[in-house]
Image (cartoon, rainbow, N blue to C red):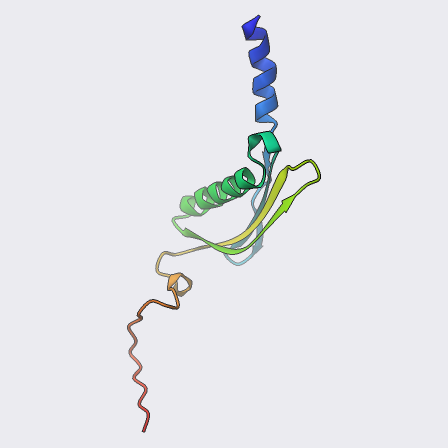
Amino acid sequence: MKSLLVVPITALIASCTMTSDIVTTGPDSYMISTVACPACGGTTKSTTMAYKEAGEFCMSQGKRLLKSNMINDRWFNEAGETVLEFRCLDEDHPAFVRADERRDSDIIVEHR
């Protein structure tokens, strides 16, 4: 009897989340969409899934993930959807330098 319940419950949990294919939107720019039902974690789970898939995609190219934009939406039944726009860039790409960190420069500006 217990084994009869395992299959439907497993199928229900597996169908609880969905991830789209990663779509190219420009040079080194991509988009992915994920959905998770409320029982599986809703928006929190869909966001985690999007970052995980995008990160693995960039790592497969030997690059790092940089988020461009993210939209989270909650449907009427509390299912969560995440649309993540991201770029896959080399680790030394200038976009990874934070504005508040010290930067070494070869340009010296003098005020006289």
